[in-house]
Image 1: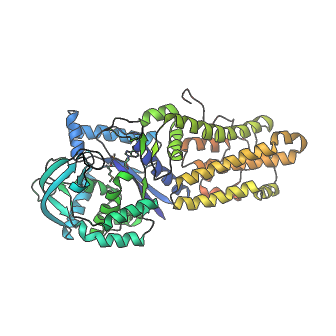
Image 2: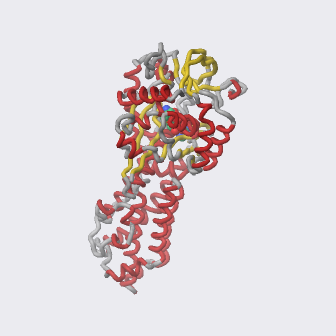
Image 3: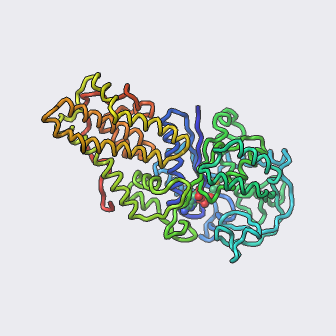
Length: 508
Ligand code: MSP
């Protein structure tokens, strides 16, 4: 039982922005969730370092390209730590392991008669590192993405993409969940149905790339080079055991701008060398700022380091996932972050935990209410814990559908439920009139906090630990399989002194 998930590898031509953090956070939440179901999980991220765009950016900064890529790759690596990513590997396309994998892959494409030498004549966008047909250009002459294109005429190796059209269509049909969300799946099928042309997979106008042996001055097209990273990381071509274990990959998380590379070219390349296509491509939308895509070239960057310094990693993770439905675009407005954090995290969850814990601390000698086993059984039959159990089941299915928004929503419903119980039953007042009932209600609330804390772990890795630590839940009892009656909190145990889960700072 294993699970493999990746982010795209990030271009090192400039600093990371919030869009990159978003991709990484989505993949991290999925990986952390799957681990909590006790599956061996491999989460891969890294940097895409070859190609003309990176070479030009280094030149512009008058830097040696190797020093340049080292510098920027390090910043992306720092970002993985900053967002609290639990990646198992960080791959760089300039590593020797990758160089070897690409050359082997190339060789396989050649041996399987999928490559031929010809001349490329057409448009190329360095910003997108993509070739464009005349018919794809906008009236103003730019690429459909708005980037500038230049005319290129050069000898090039081509990949016989056209011959894979029918196989790709058959593959999509057999795998209706290959692309999520569904509307993206249909877009891809329509694109492939409209016909596929062979694609250029080598460049000769610059040298910053993986050189193709026995060719004059060809380097591998940066997208072919980059895609191969996903198998380099599992030991391609030599580590057959690891390849067998992790390939095909379960999920590639990507932004909508790079869907064709992952959903069309990549499966075709893989089939051509006899490997299986990925199981699923999860496509997210863009973060916009002032209605435009946040990007380095547009200069409307929101710096994730800055944002996390101000608001905290969990707060930023929460906002990015909660604010937009996966697959759709969203406008980044910092005031919305502040209000989400205060309404959902501080008011709904933070206050709930604090109220319950503080009450027990001051009125119950800092202990979980001491009730007998039968009462715990009884509480598990109350609507509120039944509801928690339903949510645990539902979230399992939602994770299979990679529906992070609904999972998070469900956890918030649990917090709503707990707040509702407090308002309705007023357990603190009840202590005077019916101490037994008050204890049971307070116990059920702490049990609900245990559920909330465990379920929140993938989303809020730091704050959830604070909840679970206060409740004194043993480290080894924090996985999703522990969300059952037999792991219910031990009545009567001493809790830790309560602290605010989401402390307010100057920015909140
Ligand atoms: N190097 C390629 C990927 C190769 S993978 C084999 C690349 N790199 S990138 O740095 O330009 O983008 C990486 C990821 O960041 C993509 O998934 C992209 O969609 C995402 N984002 C870049 N800008 C974004 C936003 N403004 N909003 C959300 N994500 C966006 O493409």
